[in-house]
Length: 276
Image 1 (cartoon, rainbow, N blue to C red):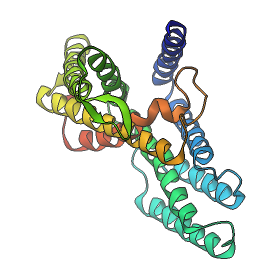
Image 2: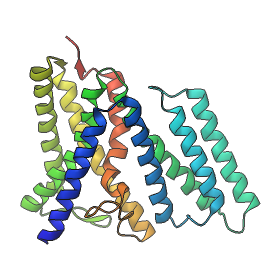
Image 3: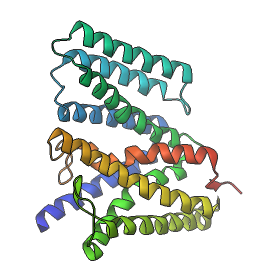
Image 4: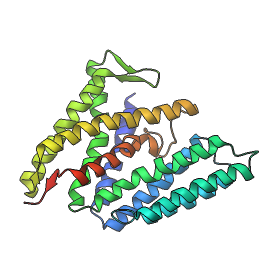
């Protein structure tokens, strides 16, 4: 048990250091790293859905993925071009299902489109946040909002957990752990606000900040549960073995995939941190 915990903690520490380094490198380096992560996630999903041998889908998916990554290098993607890529991609998937109808079914079309949006489009919002004004400060919000709920849910569940949350999907998660995730994440967001205000001298709207913390904690848990549901449906334990003690990259960032879009669109509408 302790050896597994040691491996898990050590892997997490390496990932944290890597992310911190990327945050303070030039934005284009950060964006490239996010793009590479998108491609790795897409690969893990292909293996999970057992579609890696359907070369027509693989080729289409990676072409569309590269196109989306290039388009979204701007702070806000060019809407018309983005729409064109998604529409053309879906049409080509459907054409493949007709031309190669013996091997490619409608299920493959739906799962391929899902994988592209889930793996690439969701995570690209992390680059959007980094490119915002004060992006080097705001980038911590999706990271805290994704990873703190999992930490607090784990310890709250271990200490107080008695009532199962959704045992059919994730038998180890408890209601008490879920509540602890919300409370703990809100407190961390409050601490983040204090650090930003008194260390960097920036203005903080604590009402919006704490609301975002609560929202992230809920969304992050749904992201984790959604990934568990995918694994359950596909009959796999993990999405891969890239990260020792954690499984695949998707296993580590499943909550982040949900949290990134939420944080980005929240920040577009409501000022959480601002210059004074």
